[in-house]
Length: 519
Image 1: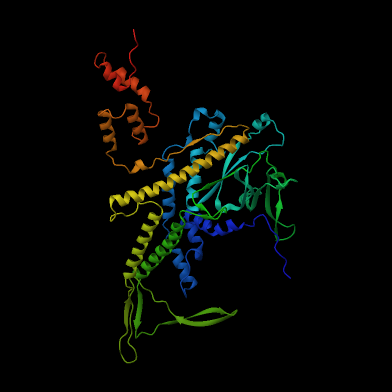
Image 2: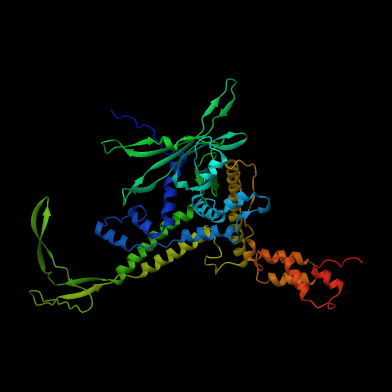
């Protein structure tokens, strides 16, 4: 009688089990050719009746062009063409401004951290930010925390590492009540050794039912579990690490989801925006490899002999554990500086050597198929301006581009909301009440505008249809002037360079100069 497997910390919830294969494929593709090729049949299946040696040869010559990563990098870079920062840094406490300069404790500015989160959330459809704090003893004073270097920090939790996440409506807002994710890491083993450690971190809030039927939620707890071998056995078990477990001093689980995909109902099963692109990347890899393989066959035609008996040789092989002599044809050398003879048969008819060459039409077909796949990937990846667009009109191109821009704008605004929630959690860790707002670049449409826009703006200014301030604001918006440009300071320099009496008061006013003092 089989015993039922007991639940363990690494058992994935249904939502994350449903997404795991897809997220693993995304991770492999974004990490590139070495990772994809090392997975062998997972992404490059064997042909029917293909021998192991032939498959190994095909795999060794596999070709992987990472179009998916190129698309994701281009899309993720758009909101970060300008520095992401606080909307009004003057109103944000200096302590928070300083923290933003090294938000993860690894020296990364909030801008860099957020760019990394968006890059991974675009193909996965989901990513997470954990807002944690350096652990100190319970009841430690502020001075003790500072002496120990305790500080809040942000940690990106990849979607592929998430094991389970359950939420509930608390105080009118969806909040996490149970979260588990993997923390695989490597540690030193002795002086020079290294060992892999599988860990699972757990955050949990228990549901508490009141006598009157009301429901409240207990303070969140945290635990760390490690997979260790049982004493004297090879079998492993999950062990709770008491020194890394306890009760959080804040009233919520500080995990922030970053969504670019669409949730299926209230579950965490996601419809990623790049799902079709990811599957096309797999097909593109297979087609590219098959093209490379076919090119090798075409460039190395097979040699055939008519009326020639092959020379034979004998070698010893093990058959069912017994060494036996086997007779087999000698391999014929082919290539430059090689001469092959076809001796006559018993009737005096000379032998004949010839080459069988593969028709190259299959190469053209595969190359065209690869080109179509790449074009489709880029269009699905909302990259119309980088795809081949020779047969598209200007209107069609602009429409396709605007569709991509609107999607990235939505992702950027979603990221903005997530970062603001992360700062709200950070403030609670710091014992503050501020809720800073984030300024993120979403004005991508100007990248598509005509290069005549500067001339048009100057014409409007010349016609006095817009002010000098409006002209400068538009020039900074289009990166024609640097973000550090100070219009007021520059105006003072302009006025200082004008000789006295060369301009009238009306002309000075047109420049934006203040009126002269009244006598």
